[in-house]
Image 1 (tube, rainbow, N blue to C red):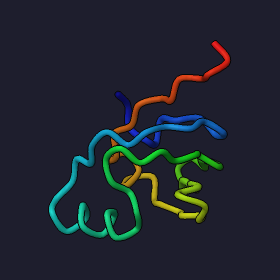
Image 2 (image 1 turned 30 degrees about the vertical axis):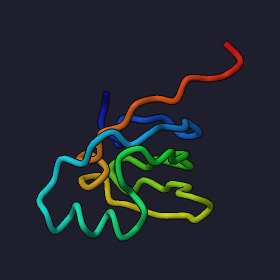
Image 3 (image 1 turned 90 degrees about the vertical axis):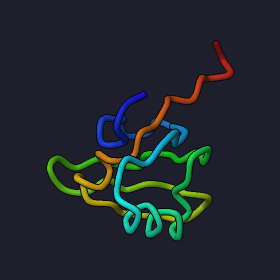
Image 4 (image 1 turned 60 degrees about the vertical axis):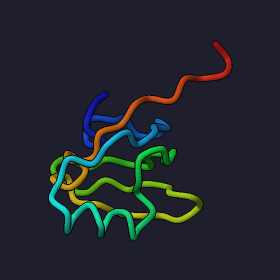
Length: 79
């Protein structure tokens, strides 16, 4: 498990937890970022923003918010 802010561009990850207060958890849930959801990292600009593909929509998060979202890398089926 690692913070979303540590993922690489082009990587697909699964959200495992959101380590934030209730308000931020709810706001992220409203955007579709809940545990179990797979997201693809489009780009990560340091220290700027993290751009994601979430269920076919693009979403930009600040680097600090992305650091509160814990993710697991998705295993490739080619292995």
